[in-house]
Length: 54
Image (cartoon, rainbow, N blue to C red; front, side):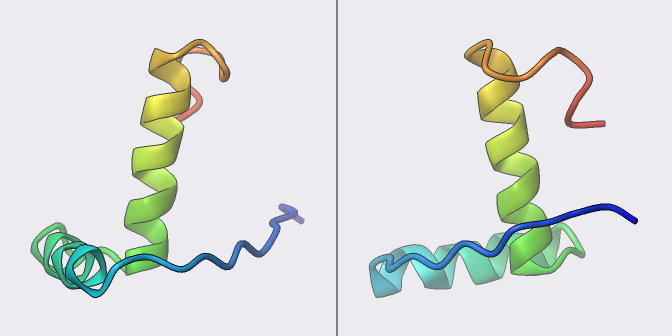
């Protein structure tokens, strides 16, 4: 079973609206899109091994 952790954060309303729109256009949930974007960023910065976002 894959383990996951919850993360709660506050963001500006404008950012949330843009995030909702981007997730909808990508046919993803907001949570899924945030996870994808974070993984890609952390790979780029060297905090995760290449290919972790796949």
